[in-house]
Length: 372
Image 1: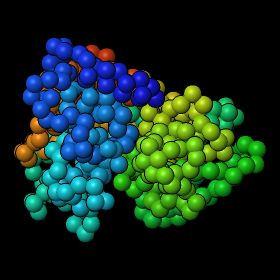
Image 2: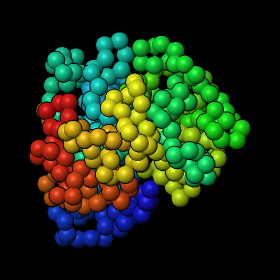
Image 3: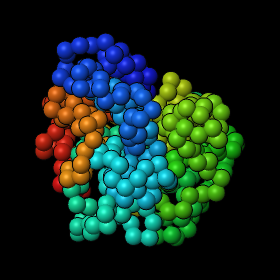
């Protein structure tokens, strides 16, 4: 949502502003580091946060080539590279935008600690720190006409789980799973067209974890970042989040999950009522607005939006950091935190509070997560 506005304005700032905002300028040492050239460091991580970090890197004067591809890819690029689908080598990054926190290192496949080091009891590799930068909601998007037609403008978490998952997280079959027609939810008969993010996506990890889902239903179309195989009206240059936004705007029978930045003029985010086995349950159908998502950080809060989550810029503090990553890190945390938070909120993400930039606990959200 509004991502191109920020990308374009950030480009103008990076190209033309001189002497403002600390690391925002391009000149001197920064101009010598081959900005925008083919040798720019590829920078992988959450597709949900991709446009945010394109704009942030441009404003910071960092030459990173922000690629998205999924939180799992960015995490693997900080670790030994395994599980990144070949996008990166071991330790290629010391920073990674992630729409979930670190996952415990895997032993059979996926990302294990850099250099074969052992993880600690929490599952954190040496040097890793979780840094919360904002809040977000994983939303179930439908065309606005479908949103209006649904009772309560939403679904229960159990209904949403049945739409997408054949089994629960214990691999037990879910009763009534995998409905194929909207008449199961009180709408006129029409086929349910289902879209999801791929298995490298932190959004998929969060969706499965919070809904206690297991195996996806057959017939759910997987949307991949920047793929020509994605259905029309998506293009090969669309990130997966943007693509799901387009698909749910265009088709009254479609439903797909994504972060807030998939919002478009013609789609809407379903309200959700949390019911067992989701805990805590809610007493009403809850909208994913800032008030209800911020309850995630409030002890004892009730009627929190059920699929609320933190967003992260996770890091390895002990590995050698490139100039371009260091430039971005300094801009976000030392010189231009307000500008970075403005990009986040412009794109539909939720600031942790109104009290100050990156007010996500601790030192601007640093260490606020699994690894601290």
